[in-house]
Length: 211
View 1: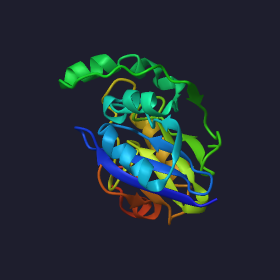
View 2: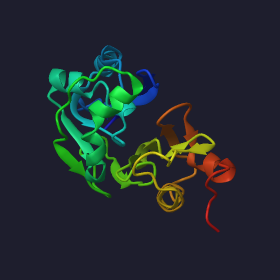
View 3: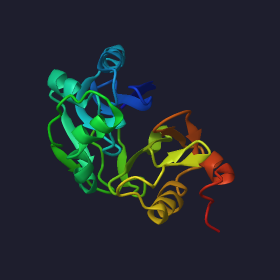
View 4: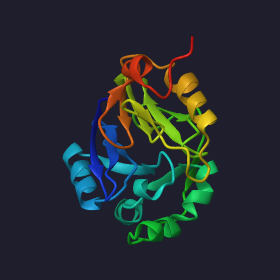
């Protein structure tokens, strides 16, 4: 298995989208298709992947805006953690609040579970509630790579003042489930530059390592 991936900002709120897959089998996933579907599909073509799933770290509008269009092009499954269903059901309302056009997107086809293996790429799902109840991170141990969504940023963390946010749960998710990963793990954040687990353990002013 040879993993290839590309991450880049998309959409009006510059969500980091990641296209990842196995170049040998051609199977691939898109994580957080938050806009600019043409740009996303260019990356898919460049990497030579056949997209099997659209995987969402959570259900805020800026992480889904291209999902409907790409689903219609690829017939890929839409995947989400079930605790964010109430946010998924409000996607049209979320768009209206930000003055953004809403493109209909089907309900998720698959509910992600904590510790669920990802059939493509050898990754694993990590439930990291706090930013939203259903926030998920995705860890690829062999690649030392973590897709963290809006749970963890470079020197910062996801906000918890939106519906379903919980500061205590966010801190616990980061300390117990993310800071336990190898220090060298590269973290693809939901917005902004990438970081590493070791850097955040040593420098994040919002969540310190335990002990």
